[in-house]
Image (cartoon, rainbow, N blue to C red; front, side, top):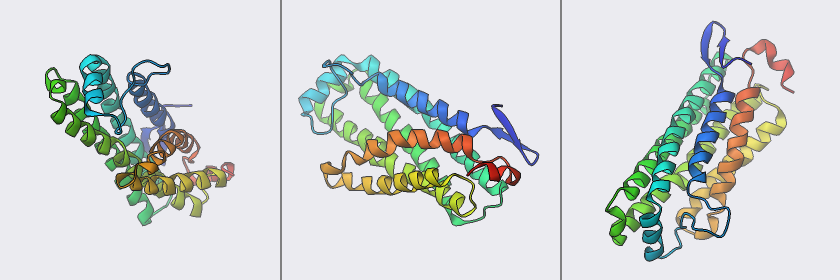
Length: 230
């Protein structure tokens, strides 16, 4: 399978490979701050100011690597959104859904960048010594990387799934999966008013990685290949 594909004379990156790069970079960044044992891990928003400050004071290097990798992950995500929408247009789709997908993809990528930059500031020497400033920055980063990630990601996925369903460009099971993720992503907005909705953010994010990869590889390169989708 070629990294660069040509659709009706126009070249572009293979969106499946781009989605793989996005998922690898994002999760490589997450690995820096997530403990798979009982050791120290990135604090949740329910932790005390003292615990949050203690983590950033003692794990600044890991946080900085996380910010670096996740900032980089935003680039392939934006490229994925642009490439998928361009391909849908070349396949004859001219509906609002693809522009909703563009908005969702770019908003997700920009919010990832904002979250990563804020995280990098928190890891900068001297910032973690001021718990009040650190906590404010923490919540800002969490807002950008929490609902600020899952809500527009849901728009990206739904914005691709629904037009693709009408044109039968993706398998029905993948369309249903995508619409479900879109709904969950929009419902994750509730996390801003109730912590009980927090689980909707990872429930959008991690299955969303899989959906992006599958859709990127499965979406046909031309109308003549659509009969192989179902």
